[in-house]
Image (tube, rainbow, N blue to C red; front, side, top):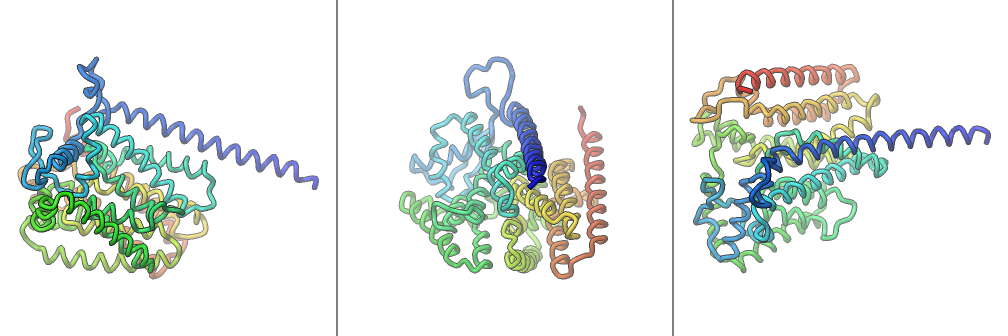
Length: 452
């Protein structure tokens, strides 16, 4: 055909332009990652250090992991002592199986080992976004998926849940990766459901993702999640019976093991209620809030899975742990990165065809703004100050919880009665305006509260 040559040339030009765009995006993301790497989050540059480990920043949570693993190897009871780290004494709060998993950390020095964990978490976060993006956009090529994930990663490094995960050298991202691989990967090495159970044996909260398998009616995967979690827990019990007995029958029921519920970074229902009413009261209110959100989440997941939105349903599932756990430190909210990625690619897929695309894109921008600003750190926080916040301060101090509630309400309203195109655009513009205002107020508070 005469036009085949020009058409082929145009197609090749579009492919070349797309690849060039993603290549530029990846290069930019690598530059941002490099700048982050040499920032205070990972490395210190203060002349020539006395030893190799002094090149790297100290990360206190990694030190707790390492000390707990050393105590486990020594046969000590993990939960009847504190661990001297960073000038303070902290408890080991994870299940005994976690200490077994952390044993390889004892082979590395504190600072270098923490840096390895942080860099591994960065790669894991990128891979989480890749899997979520593939789930939403199966027709995207590898270059597009990898490039988009790199762009999201560069933004994620600025978001407070990721910043704090790296600052403490936490395992949140790695646990999230286990869950996402188990649920969204096209093929898995272990039976599907096994990694969710293993993640729950390391840190209890991933157990909530068994709900995903139940609502999807994948009872085999649900059974594997229970079996794998119980299996590795029993294995650890055989290795360390006294430590296991102490954790499961004493430590687990001790509310004091997880710290001050009113601390601003506790972005859960329990944290919000404690800041309003005090730590020792209103457990009934907390239970009612959890039951309500469970019902809404379960319904939303059922609808989303019925419409083929697996990644979105998984992100909704994560809110069950984040909102209903007694403590959800802000660095636990790394799921917001995946949620933002899913919202953006979903909006892109339906742009101009669905009214939901506009608030989805605007909501993604809003979530990035809220987590970058991290308003709870801009407020008074010592000597019981969070219990004296006014309503305006609660708006910023409880921002992650409020953001999640708004998302659930908006999704529920949309799924019950979809909006028209005009309503979607109006809601999107309102969301952009709120995000801009949030950024301005946060910036003003920062610059007026801290000397530079």
